[in-house]
Image (tube, rainbow, N blue to C red; front, side, top):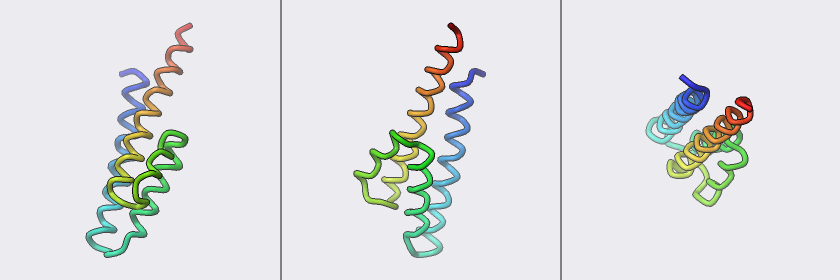
Length: 88
């Protein structure tokens, strides 16, 4: 398994964990602070691409999903670039 697949798997696990934490907040805690915190964590770990999720409502499931997806795409391409330069 190459580095790109490992990066995507690790970030996907991180993303799903954060999404489940946000869903817990929405369905059992009845307030949006969990969603806002989760959105911020995914933005922090996916900077700079995940900053584009700021165009969606902060703390919403859509914003969290977009932040996670953009972060995953970004880290995939970072790992591809790293592998490209390591092969030279």
